[in-house]
Image (cartoon, rainbow, N blue to C red):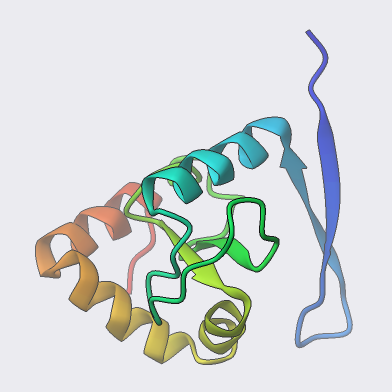
Length: 117
């Protein structure tokens, strides 16, 4: 069975550009997450319509880390404004994520991603 992919442009602070393939399973995971979270932003609590494009699946660790790509601890359902805010304020995202998960689960997520801070 062929893999369906979608390439997404991701700008970086440096001049270089990288691409992350968004697979069919990514879109299906986003739909399941929206259903489980009742189409509501986890940060601000704004509820969106069922097929709204205003909600995004945010990955605390990039999708390139396959070990945590579909881990519920790594993904958050965020509205565009909250997603952009956390993208530009990593320390705020980290504080929010630690508070949401608790210290033990946050450390487990770090270990699963094999990232050391």
